[in-house]
Length: 378
Image 1 (cartoon, rainbow, N blue to C red):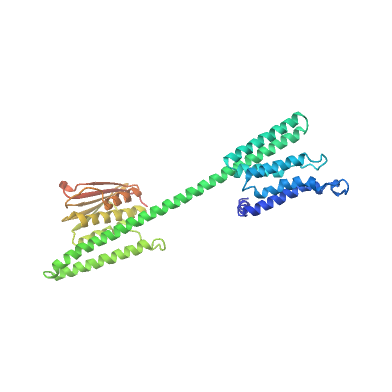
Image 2 (cartoon, rainbow, N blue to C red):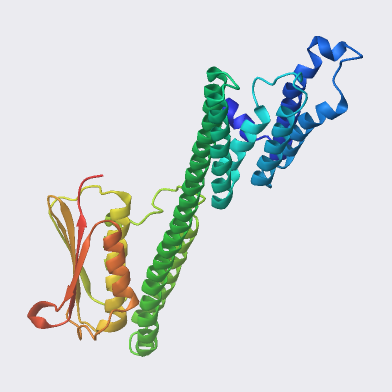
């Protein structure tokens, strides 16, 4: 049944209207062709008697473009048919008028629907008046009223269903746009974290390298090696980030297990750093794993760029229902405002249901970032 409906919906509107018009024309022409009078050369039907049939069917070709005008034309043609020769063959079902009413209910504007309902009310009044005057039978009157009301009700039901479908389609498109915006924001944050962290390390090493060239060539060589390593690591992470849509390679998503590498890189770059883990590590959902890695990466980047600290500590506390991350330094502390880095940390934590707090380090020195992420096992 549903497949048949989908096939009908794929038919071009004009082709469907032509088919409907031909079908209605055939149905309304049948009484002229299938009666004994039609074959009588003396009493047979004339062209003038057949014209109202054409007037009922042919306007349906324009029913979608001008629903109310087509309804008025079909109504006039139907009236002309009824006022024709009393011996004219009767039409058991007014197909054209039913389709015209249905079309106004589906495609008509609010104003056109109002006029359509007015015509329907007038038709009902005429039917009831005829019943009072005993012109048609009661069965004919009731049947006619039921058919017109049913055609109108079906049209409104179809219009409501189409409006609902259009609304769902609009909501789907809006959700798709929002998903694209979220993806762009996530990629922007990742690019900021990756490049900010790597460039900060490279700057520190580049500044320290010339100072160590003469008194300590080995230290200078190590500094330049660290610059190269930071650049290669940044390029590797960028390749993984840009390849996420096309590949599903192992290790493409940052994880909690790789936080130790971040701390080692910072320490090797000349900023003393240490990692402490308490509790029992366990796998977390991918979004929480990535958020934990990026939060530590951004916090360490801020320390290297702004803190001028002699040491920084990273603590991972595995609780029963959460992973608590504390990044603390003994530098110059918070200078005010919410930079891009702190905003990024807050957004990443919030995206996976976590929370963030910022404050002073131990003895009100330095700066501390505390992040609590949901710790249910993946």
